[in-house]
Length: 575
Ligand SMILES: Nc1ncnc2c1ncn2[C@@H]1O[C@H](COP(=O)(O)OP(=O)(O)OP(=O)(O)O)[C@@H](O)[C@H]1O
Image 1 (tube, rainbow, N blue to C red):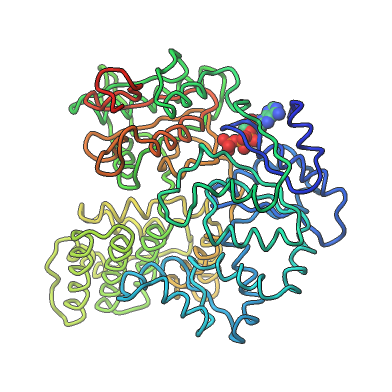
Image 2 (spheres, protein in one colour):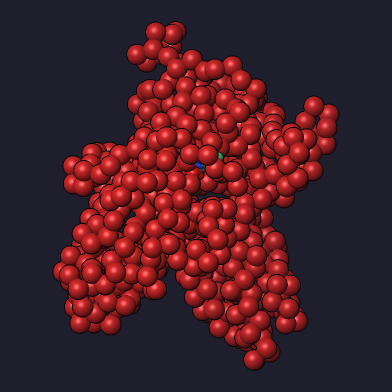
């Protein structure tokens, strides 16, 4: 890969000590950090590594891919790219006993979310109590607890810094209070290389993400600072960045064919979304990209699911027939795990009598809706969870469940399923039970993740269980364990094809093309109930989404939506 550094880049590369690198999207911050890591690796002693801390597994995956471009296989062994969660969990698991003498255990996000929904008092107080009294660490408190541990034990801190003399901190603008406390502890003995773009701050609606974080960093560490400004290596020949900057600044948009806007009407909205994605794929292929990657972004998880349904149907657009488009949805990991539990419970059917097998699956379906309700409380999710719970008790009491969907599950269980020992085929057979009622469509969508490609772990473990017992006994536990592990580990798979996710989740990623879809009713960009004009936070978010593209962007918006920018002084502007 041909990397040419600017003068600022070269100075940043050569600088010793604590460094802060700022710059816009695609300005080369991550690349520079990896080049710095490469230099440091040469000087490391045996057992030492460069630590690269990031927020999400997706971001870790992206950095691991980038490592392949820049570092040799040998060098890659000496860089640990970790999420804050994974890094802190290791510290707590290995040394948590120092805090209270108890064997540390972990409360994973799914169970934590459910426990939080059921807890009547202040959950923040309860998680502290669990940690201090029971040595049980909830996901949400990992960084906080790990920072506390390092603050109390200088020998542990020195040990960690001995292992990781250089720590790279990515996306620093979105660091929360606990992560900031952890970074400060690490900095006592390790050297920090910090990357940030204040304008990519998209999580500051959370109270613990302080918009002044960069200034706090400057005040605490007086780092050598390097600003890559508006350099743009991601889409150097396109006007994507200038368009995105204009959206963020609420200024007149530049005229460019790199970013297209497609206006839709209620009757053709779905077909237009479908057509936009199809067009994007064909444009990129025409441009010579054999296997293009296209991100389709929506404002909320719910709207992303709607887009998935749109792409999964046939449409006619301008007299052209559009076939369903294969795509992958980056989902809420907890809901996916809950849906996987339902499928796993079906794999266990042959081991139990019909009554308890069907009732267990109905309970798992209720858990799925409880999980949904825990994340986005709604009466409907709560009522649906209660109705499946009631159906499970009815079945256990020898009665017929009331709802059609629960009846369908029971009937499928009575008919029985034959598994053959091919874990993938059997998983699909079990999942197909969810096709027996339209009412299970949401659950089916959540269960349609690329299980075996994404987490071979599960396929392998289920196959091993079959080889040993000729059954999928314990499938629910196997799946749960593997998914818990998968939450912390990231695999290095290149994004390919069409991938759907929220705008927030797209941060730190890169695709050949990006399609951003605004809904007619849900998923609106500018919502006065959420935010006041001129919608600064949404504008930053849109800039993050738009600048994920290397070559082309399409914005699909209802014809009734307000213009993307209304510079002050223009008719209808808020200022
Ligand atoms: N100096 C360079 N010369 C050539 N290509 C580069 C250079 N720096 C970065 N790139 C390429 O540009 C793209 C964006 O780089 P990088 O991810 O490092 O930017 P970033 O500032 O971290 O972006 P973001 O903040 O949007 O995540 C990558 O594909 C990378 O390989």
